[in-house]
Image (cartoon, rainbow, N blue to C red; front, side, top):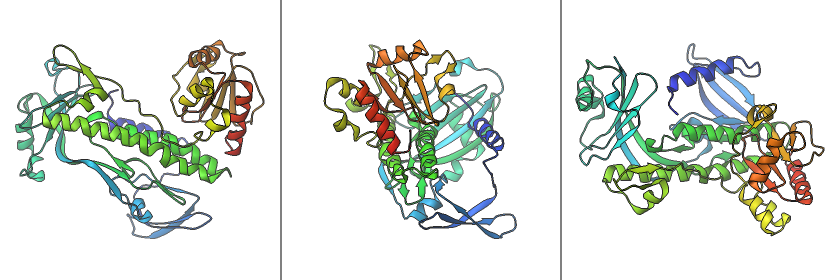
Length: 397
């Protein structure tokens, strides 16, 4: 749960360098995007020598943050969800272990100045402070001012100040995520206050949902599959953002409203509120139209309820489920059947763990997408065949 983001980013860049299919070009600034029926022309400038160059792409994904150039080129605006506030973020490295600070993340519902303490990995610690309207962002980032904020907990003798920055925490969602061959992901598609720690997580979910759909479109499958990216992801991320906004309102107003208390946890006799995991499902999209075809029996309704859900990691005889399937669609079924080469087929006949999972879910087969979410779960051989036919129509099977 705890990690240092720059360390993660170094790992990701290192993994990219190992892939012969990936070219990384740093120090380039995209100047223009022009899409047509066959692809997108990307015009970019080398920031080192100022020269303009261009390339052709089948699709372009804007992952360029809150001030996204790609979003502007798409003519897309952001829709506010009701929260905007400046916070000072201070990252420090302790000079020694200080267990008295606490081995947890803590929200201070201080009526004068709401604050957050984060126990990060190793000796790293972070504090965040809400800024008042009259406080100047530049002045509050100065070392003397930051240590004044931190004085309640530590002094310069206890830690080294690594950095201080003022962020405007917003809650916004892009009105459209896909236009033709241009797509948005991450912060250029949505912005969330940090109170649930879901900003980077939401971007990773975007990538997991979009990447395999782009692969289907690029290998000649139904390009319309990309429309399901926004319809599935937007309601999901909006639910997380709205919950984070409610959490921020609780912290700022020093009171627990009924809605947020029901969503995130329940208080004990001492007044402590314990968090529950927020598990937002996918919005309508792939598999949504299968319900009428499969019939209205209770078993099929149970299968429909699993659509879009993440499947728990299980251990098979050949290893972890994620590792066995890889970045492919997969069918987990009681009986083996013929499937396309790029579709993994796992059956209870070969591994009892598959049968145990199907028993737990109360179905005969599940069709898993590469993002490990259920496309559909089916009961009965006829229903399994129908799901496979639908998947083939999308070039998934």
